[in-house]
Structure formats: structure tokens, C-alpha cells
Amino acid sequence: MIHGVKKPVVGPSFLLSQVGAYAARDFAGRLATRDLKPAHAGILRIVGANPGLSQQALSKTLGMFASRLVLLLDELELRHLLERRAKDRRSHGLYLTAGGRRALTAIEKLTQTLEKKLFARLPPRELAQLERTLRLLVTANEITSAVHPAYRELE
Amino acid sequence: MIHGVKKPVVGPSFLLSQVGAYAARDFAGRLATRDLKPAHAGILRIVGANPGLSQQALSKTLGMFASRLVLLLDELELRHLLERRAKDRRSHGLYLTAGGRRALTAIEKLTQTLEKKLFARLPPRELAQLERTLRLLVTANEITSAVHPAYRELE
DNA sequence: TATTGTTATACTCTATAACTATA
DNA sequence: TATAGTTATAGAGTATAACAATA
Image (cartoon, rainbow over the protein chains, first blue to last red):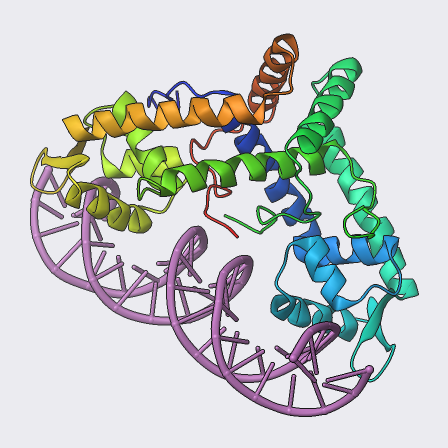
């Protein structure tokens, strides 16, 4: 009941979406204190793990249009978190700067803080089981994109 | 690895967002075959459980601005799935029509189909455990909104 | 004076096509 | 001819304020 309004019964897929969206929103809120958006974080993560990646490859990995990537990369480059180095005269390799690596570390810390709060009431064994179940679902359903669209700032 | 690109290590909150967004996207896709959006489904669900609800109360329950609700209700009313009945000359009560109740039933069926596929590889006990864990997270984190913003059509 | 519903508007995120330049 | 990156534009979804009518 919310304000005396009956909540309809919902199943596991609704709960999954609901809790997932909550986690994503929380993450976006924490990132915002560093003037970053979830998409920026996704880029830093992938480039961090794959130095020299091309924009095309990155856009495929993120499931994001290359045209959108351009603006996000511009923003990251302007803030010296990432740089484009020319491979030949038409394609670039993407690399994190020292500042970008620091930002990535900060994002990891911020995620740990988030998870500590989100999972505070969960016994460690239950959290471990949740993580195993989620990984199974990712594999079984071939969920590949590394950054997903729910990652947004909302409310 | 996606196309030879290394995926960075991610934690349980990322997985939760990822799988949740996947479920939401799948749901949106199935709804689209009936020309409905997730927000419509959320409205039908809440009004179905609370006949006579006011728009104000509904907007609070959904965590949605009343101004946005107006257009969504217009659409549902135009399709005779829902009606606004005047309570007094400034407020209305919201009610499902017979067609609205049928739509709600169809949405429930479609959700079952979705869940059958999404959880196909999950042993029943593991699914039951997942659902318990998710309910605990909803309660512990006071996640109240009945329709969440991840519910959108994407890609 | 407060509340209900509505209109109008701006902003962000996403999608798509068309374009430049290089290979 | 195909590819990498970019620009421009249109469309959703969302946020906010201002408004009219009524309690």
C-alpha cells in the first residue's frame, strides 16, 4: 500500500526490472556528483579494459550508435579523461589518460559504497547466490551489451 | 568477449541493472504488439486494483508527473480501455472498462510467456529464491514506485 | 486559499540518415 | 567501393511551470 493505494501483485520479472532500475538510478545519482553520466562510466570501463579500441568497436560493444558516441567522447576528451590517438588518418585508437584511470578507480569505489547500502540487509550467502543467478541469466539469455539503456539519470 | 573485445569485470548491482533492463525491454517489445507502452500497462494494473482512483493519487503511485498522465489517460480512454467518471466537477474517478480488463488479462499472459523464456534455465528452487531476495531488496530499500522509468522501448 | 486537472514548453536521450575523408 | 568518424535532425520520454476551474 502506498498512501492507501493497493499495489497489484507482481511477478519476478517486474521485481527484477524494478530493483534493477533502482540500482541504475542510484548509480546515476552518485556519478552525477562527479559530473559524469552512466554512459561516460561505461566508456571508461570498456576503454580501460581495451586500450587502443576503435570507436566502431566501442559502439558495437556498448550497443550504442557511433553518432552518439562522438559527443560523449568529445566530453571525456575535453576533460582529459580519455584521448583519441590517430592510428591512420581516418581511424583513432582510444586510451584512458592518468586522470581517466583515476576516475575509473573512483567509480569502482562509488559502486562498492552503493552495493554496501543496496545489499545491506542481505546475508552474504544470499548475495553470493543472487550474483550466481544473475550471471546465469545473463549467459542463458545472451545479454551482451556492456552498457544498457536503463543507465540514465531520472527523477 | 564481444567481437574480441574484453568485457570489464562487473559486480552484482551492475548485473541487476543489466538483467532488469533486459526484462523491461523484452516486456516493452511484447506490449508493442498490442500497441501499448509500459506506462499504459502500469496504469491499467494500478487502476485495475484500485477502481475509482483519482489522477493525483495515480500519479503519486506511479511516481509520474500528473501532466504526463493526462496524455496517457487520453490514449487509453480513446481506445475504450479506461474511463474517467466525474466525481465532482473538478475531480474524476478512474475505472477500467470491460476491454481494459481484457487487456490486463492479456498483459498477464504475455508476462508469463516472457518469464517462461527469461527463467527457462533456472531451476524452480533458484527462481523462488531469486524472487524472495528481490522482495527483500524492495522492502529494505523502500522501493515503492509501481512503474519505473526503465520501462521503455529501446533499440 | 488549496486542490484537480490541463496546457505549454524545454531538455535529455535515442534513432536515423546523410555527409566528409580516407582506405 | 567500403569504412571511420562526424554532423544534423527528428522523435520519444521526462521535467517544470503556469494556468483555469472548482472545492
